[in-house]
Image (cartoon, rainbow, N blue to C red; front, top):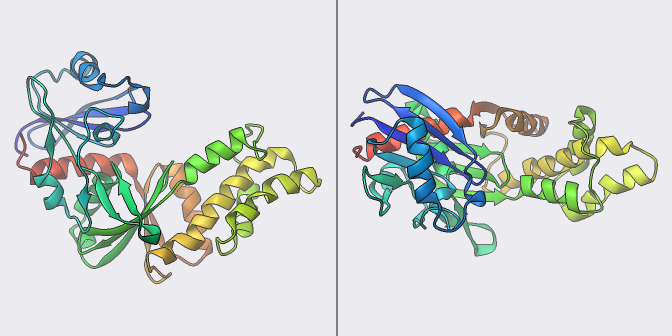
Length: 304
């Protein structure tokens, strides 16, 4: 395994850390309320040194980090790697930060051609993709599609183990903004499965989303649905629109399975949307994938 190390998934809202043994075994694991959105500029290095290392008893271990810690909000800006990109490309570009003591490296993000010729970017999801690939050598053969649901959902096209293209959808962020700060704001009720399914139906082909969104309000004020159902309906409408429209943007038909990698409940909702449209799906745990990705990058990069 090229030596023990501290693996970190450092995202926008939190940090998760694992101690990985020389034989690849997973030792202590812990979460920290240290997402980069909560840090002041230049604060990441000190918080890692003074809080994370002591809590993990990892003062002498080299560290490998993935996620938004390599962004403008994080420790330092790590350049993006251009698509197509494989795990060997990323492992050769692990970025060493200027930090005294054991080496600290950050996984680069990935950049590619997005919609209408504009660029698209990801940080963190690439590590999950390569962790998912590393779990089964057969996955690195042929064409695969991975969907990573979340605040900024990623739809990723993989060919022979390399990320060749992807599209980002601001689905989770739209849900948060619309349900809290717009005329579609909801009453905070829990998930309504029946309303979610109605939202999937209302999404239809995924087009004219801005017009379809107003139905969240109209169905309530016209007396056709209770206000408590709005959150579920809005969720279904947004996720259903993604499922109907985005695979086509990557040239994907229902003949290609969609691999859902991420938080289990979010993956379950996307699974309902996709299977309703005739796609074959499989759900994979995102935490397991990111940890497998960090271990695979550590091995490919030769360790410390």
